[in-house]
Each structure stands twice: as structure tokens, then as C-alpha cells.
Image 1: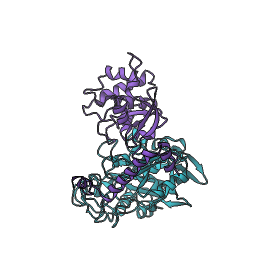
Image 2: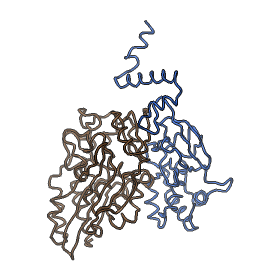
Image 3: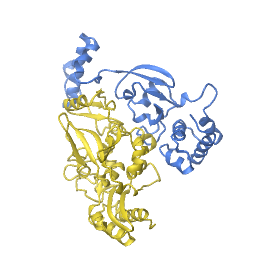
Amino acid sequence: MENKKSLSRKDCGATDKGRRAFLKQSSALAALAIAPPALVNAAESGLDDKVAGFFEKVPIQIDVNGASYKLSIEPRVTLLDLLREQLHLTGSKKGCDYGQCGACTVHVNGKRVLSCLSLAVMQDGKKINTIEGLAKGDQLHPMQEAFIKHDGFQCGYCTPGQIMSAIACVREGHANTEEDIRNYMSGNICRCGAYPNIVDAIMDVKKQGGAT
Amino acid sequence: MINFDYSKPSNQKAAIDAINKYSSAQFIAGGTNLVDLMKRGVVSPQKLIDITNLPLKNIEQKNGFIRIGALALNSEVAEHALIIKKLPLLSQALKAGASPQLRNMATVGGNLMQRTRCPYFYDVTMPCNKRKPGTGCGALKGYNRMHAILGASDQCIAVHPSDMCIALAALDAKVVVSNSKTERRIPFLDFHRLPGTTPDKDNNLQRGELITAVEVPDNDAFAKNVLYTKIRDRASYAFALVSVAAALDLRGDIVQNARLAMGGVAHKPWRLLTAENFLNGKAATIANFQQAAVIALKDAKGYGYNNFKLKLAPAAIVQTLKMIAGLS
């Protein structure tokens, strides 16, 4: 009786959708038990080049700060969680996790983006740069130096995102005036209110000939 | 986030076949809105079809149109030389939207498809006819400061959040969509919907259709005297309380042709056709601009916290037109 009870639909919390997913998972697991994954893949991929069921991790290859990684990930993993939880690069911060604060800003193929709203699986083959990749040994990146010189942070939580965004801001040619910088840095929120010093730091780097 | 299947088709046919095959599948490109909605449990598609491999990024001048591929990034379109020269209103509107990081991710097609930012839509513990038809509208008698003053219904008073779309509405763009058999062009004002009794439907896109491009008439008359005004709670990186996209074809001080659209006021980009008709052929004067603004807001209605928009919206129209005409 105990066994039967534990398998009832109600106890599984099964709605029709949930039950369908459960059956799909069960049959998928059964299929996986008797067939090599490649065969299951081939059967599923009648139309698509690359198909991943939720029961399966997706292989991706990405370059992070010059190092190449071959990884196997669930489709729902964000780039931010991949960096922090799997590659242990915890410099990129999880501020809001909803694309509103900019603390997770990284560069993908040279462009600044929000890693919390990027699915890692969609970054296959791309080059990622994070705050950890800026310094060359003990030599800080000019933007890191400028943030220290101008006191561009207080608690420091938003700083990795600010610096990644600031480097892109200069590179894009959007650091010509203070107003320009304030506008093009508006996607990075600083709760401590270090904005004036952040603007000074960026102006300084821009004057020195920019940052790469 | 509830897990999902993922596929990345390499061509348009495979992408459309895939969306037809799975009932709750969705396309994903930039993901700036969809991933957000999935994290909050507002939507939970069983399958995501990643369309970023499709060759839909081109921005080109073609047969009297500027054709912008659906996968062109918001930042690329805003900074593109052809767009700055031919469609400066669109460039201005794009730069007024979101943040640089988001504009580097968001695509033109995705911008068209973004959902409202109504907090009752986002909060899954609240009633919302758009998220869950039949549950009621939390905003109607709730905190509705950001909400619609035009074209709303007793089912939904949410507003469309895009800046890009307001400029495209003013510029008479067309949305090019494909299904597995054919291609069609949807006039911009017919793309998004008013809420009526089915606020769960944001637009008139059919199941199995993929947005492939936006086409904007190549019309130099609306490439010179243009302005996108966005009024918001902070100077940058906030949704519009009210926005105005305006283009005037001026001959001397006579308005030959006016184009006006508003954001932040309705469930869709709100074109001000009667105000345009009033202005056409008239002198570009403050009195005429004020009269046009009154006409534009004739049917406007506040819901309490957003009553301020009844004054802000006409003031924004007048200010925008004054600046374009050099009367400010």
C-alpha cells in the first residue's frame, strides 16, 4: 500500500503537463538505458541541427579569458551561473539577476552584455571576457588602476560590472563627455553612489588614450 | 527556471518547422525579456528554438525601403550609418531604450515581441488577465502609475514598453513575417493589438510565423525634422512614462505632413492620426501644436495614479513639436 500511495498522481504533484513531462522523462530514461545517447539524439533531431531534451545536458565549447572550455550544461543555465558556479569565476556578480543592475556585465565577442540574461547554451563557440581576465599578472588594467586612483567604488559589489562596462564604453566611443559617459554607463547601478568618481575614472582613461 | 528543450536550427525552414511541431515552443534570440519572464515563472515554454544562426541581420536600402533584418541588434541599428542618415527618428528611439548592455543583446524582432512591464503581469501571485485570462486586472484599481490612458479595457490597462516601436509606428513601417508556406507584410499599426477582452494576445502574429524583417519607407521628408522625446523617472535606463515620436515635413513654416506616435500611453504604439490630419497644411505655430495635442488626447482616461499623464502627454506633444519647429 505504501508503495502504491507513493506513486499516485496526486502525490507526484502531477498536473496534466507535469504528468506528460514525467512520462517523457521516464521513457527517455528508459530509452537512454538501452540506447547510446547519440542514437537518442539522432531520433530526436529529425528537423533540428542541435536538439537537447530536458533530460540531457548540452555540450558547448566556449573561450573564457583566453582559456578554452568544453562543458556539458543544462539549457536553463545562465552564462552568469556557468561562470560563477561551474568555472568558479566569481568576479562577475549576481546583483538583481533580472537584467536591471549591470553587476553581471561581461564581454561576449568583444561586446558588453548582461550575463544573467544570457543562456550559456547560446554562447557556444563565443569568446567571453570577465573581470578576472583584465589584469596581466600583477599589472592591473588601466581601467582598474583608474577606479582605484579616483575612488570609483565603496562596497565594491557593482565594480566588476562597472569596469567591464566602462572599458566597453571607451572602446565604443561613448566616453567623449561626462554627459555621454553618464548616459552610456546608466545600465550599471551603484548603490553606494560612487557615480562622480566612476565618471572621473573613465574620463581619465579616455584622456590617456583609451583602454583595450 | 523550469528546464526546457533547446534547439538551434541552421535555417529558416527548420526553425518554422520546429515551432509548428511543439505546442508551447518559443523562438529566442536576445532573450532579454524572455529569460527574465522564464526566471519569474511568468512563462515556461517547454522548448526554446534559438534562431540566432539564421541569416537575418542585414540592414539595407532596397526598392524604396530600408529593410532591417529581424536579428539586427538594437545597438547595431541605432549606430548604423544608413539608419542615422535615413531614419534618424528610429536611431533616437533605440538609443532612448534600455541600457547599452541590453541593446547589445536585444534584436529588432525581439523588441517587437517584448511583453508589457506591468508589475501585476510580472508578479505571479497577482491577478492578471494578460498572464492568466479570467483572473482579473490587478492594475485597474491598483498602483497604476505607469499604465494606459488610451485604448485600454476593463480587462487590461497595461502599456506597450518599446521605444523602437513608437518610431516605427510613426514611420509607417511594415513587419515582414514568414510561415512554412508564404511571406506576408503586416502594416505596423496592425501588428500590435488593443487589449479588449483578450489581453493575453499582444499582437496579431499567427502560430508558426517568424518575424524576418522590418521595412521602413525610404522617405527623406521624414528624415530631417524629427525628434523622439522620452519622459521617465530618471534621465536614462527607465521605461517611458510618456514618449513622443514626431516627424514633420516642413516647407517654410507650413507643416506639409506630420507624423506623430506616442509610447507609454496604450497597449500598442499609439499613432495620433487625427492630430496629424489637423496639422497637415497648417502653420507650425504653438497654438496649432497645442490644438493638435488636445485632439490627440480627446479620448484619454486616467485610472487614478496615472492621472498625471493626462497633462504630461499633451505637454510632451507640444514640447516635441516646438523643438522640431525651432520654437522652443
